[in-house]
Amino acid sequence: MISLNVAANLTYDVTRPTSFAFAIVAARTPHQTVTSESIDVGPGLTFELVPYGGNTHQLVRLAAPVGTLEVSYRATVELDAEPDDPADLDEVPFGDIPADLLPYLNPSRYCESDKLSDFAWRHFGHVAPGYGRVRAISQWVFENHIYQAGSTDGSSSTTDVLLQRAGVCRDFAHVAIALCRALGIPARYVSGYGIGVEPQDFHGFFEAYLGDDWYLFDPTQMTVATGLVRIGFGRDAADAAFATLVGEATLIRKDVWVGVDGTLEQDPGATSTA
Image 1 (spheres, rainbow, N blue to C red):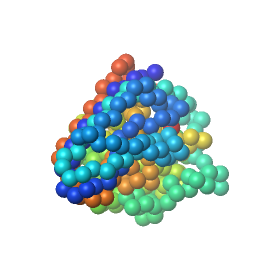
Image 2 (tube, helix red, strand yellow):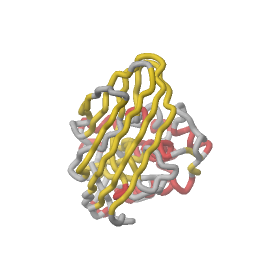
Image 3 (cartoon, rainbow, N blue to C red):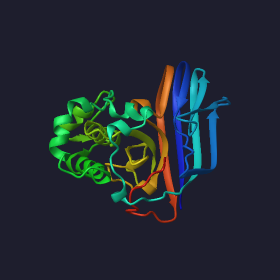
Image 4 (cartoon, rainbow, N blue to C red):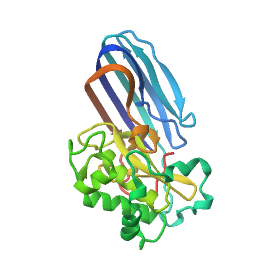
């Protein structure tokens, strides 16, 4: 059992009345328990928690007037990962993939898997199907890309990142997701908190569907599966932004902090926190 303390502080300059939806709340899953939590929105604003993602994830929704908006989140989260033997986790034949997971095989805005089929099979077709192949993809992304802040922006897709071989956590995840999908492995983007992320920020990683569950991978290798707290998920980062707004507001400060109580397992095996 690992206990992580997470926090996020966001400050906005709101220049027109604006509606916000924040994905900053730690998810509730069978392997991830929130033991304490606080949400503060100021000055003096009310908010509501709205469930999504099968009622395991929550959005903070609010309407802000013109002025300064401050949002603060604090939580203690216990991670009770149950490692599985990677040798037991095979890829699921297309005909057996649950229908509600089929969208995670399709190309999406940032994960252009339809353009990478030949590339993926040339590089990973010889690797035995299953957990080991997804891990090989994640390792290849880590070894062949430079983590470089400012090297990409909100319009950068998988093919852009592959060409320049540089990006940030979301780009590493997008490349791995696209390669998995090109091989017929359902994969999805996950946003969350991660111990050891540098510079500290909301972290992007991914999950692959193997056997009958989702399993975590972090191509940046900044942390391990037992050091990740899930917030939300989607086809790519467009579905899991920490803030979505309608109106006019500028983010002027963002602080994210993660601390750990206990010792992290460096290689616990195939780990699911879904």
